[in-house]
Length: 576
Image 1 (cartoon, rainbow, N blue to C red):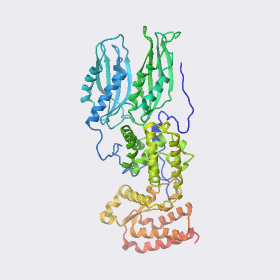
Image 2: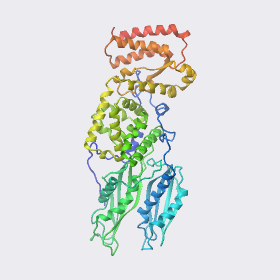
Image 3: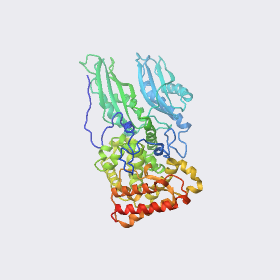
Image 4: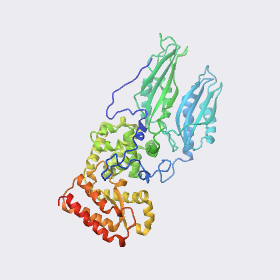
């Protein structure tokens, strides 16, 4: 017998798919910024290069670079103590002699993330009561020396004897789980919201009066965790009666939900969107008034690995998620200020990954179609493009967006109230409008130029920087083929994309600038087509001096001729 739970999807209350998070990383790797030359978007440079991933404040392993260390010895001890409590709540407190369980955890940096557990043998009878103090003392002693900090999977095996539990701990093979935390924390108990989520889910999992008298039932279901919350909707699967006739059922009460709730709560201590598949057993024993319900197995489903070329992006987005959740657990108010220590690059990677992973792009399309069209392509270049969008967003609006999206990361889109949803749409609409508005504020223009110079010499052309040397490097300029003042005519392209940046000597830059000064002083406005033509003219006439050392003694006369010819062609384009 099977049953399923299907509900309509509201625009801001959409339940993410099982593999939703890494869908963003499986997008076509060929997505890129459009070239400012005559290539189409698809024909422009396709593969992401280290240029788009450099200088973002991430370590080689994808973790965030931090000013001060996190996760001390006290936090690692707290992780071990929490795991002992989880083993007790799921298995130890109610185990019968002969019962056996396995629990798999991911260790990373001393943090312990529950991956799965399963009852491997059922028990019978009632041996001597096991006290929490004895259970925790023995297991904690083992953990203190065996957990470590290196990335690996650990398996706890618990077997219940007549008087106590016996434990074994071993390393098992398996990839590093993408939803695992990497920073140990002294986690507090489950929040009231999470417990409420779990009670709501448990109510759906435990059907009223469905356990046969002196019988046993088995049930499967899939649950969706989002940040620190458990989604209230449940995908119900197989429900079958394994013992008992079903003619008479055992009465139930709300108290039956607590063992189920306690088994679900540990899976909230992970990162991102994840699906947990659970198996439950309901059993009624002769002489007892009510049936007993237990979660006898639970597994976090592993998403498919992203393509090799997108794994850096995947790790970086995960790192941002973890940092948000860590601060959110500590104090929500401080989390709102967290973004102040992040770079625009880090924020852009976080937003691009989050908008797609949480299924928000569809709801955004009506108010921000250009933003959606670029971010929907995914990849590092989309993040680099969105960085230029963020720099053009007023500080108050950036802070408002950060506050709203941090709540989404911690609790999911469903947690946003109507006012927050409206504010998010308003913020995105403002971004869309500014994409087609000239960049006029000095801060934005200076920041874009600063990034362009840094990335050009440190990432795109480090050999040229080395050849110039420290003294001569200051005399070389980084020029935008299509100037910043015309970036609004090309809203889907990155003004700081590698193909729009060229390095040249100060003398060459002066001549190129004379062309754009001529444009500025002879016409009130130019079209996108005219800007592209003028950019081609400057490339054709001055391109020989791009990305190379300049020798004025050999090129002075040629430069003057190039400027004269370029001005003549530009005048023709403008109809002058």
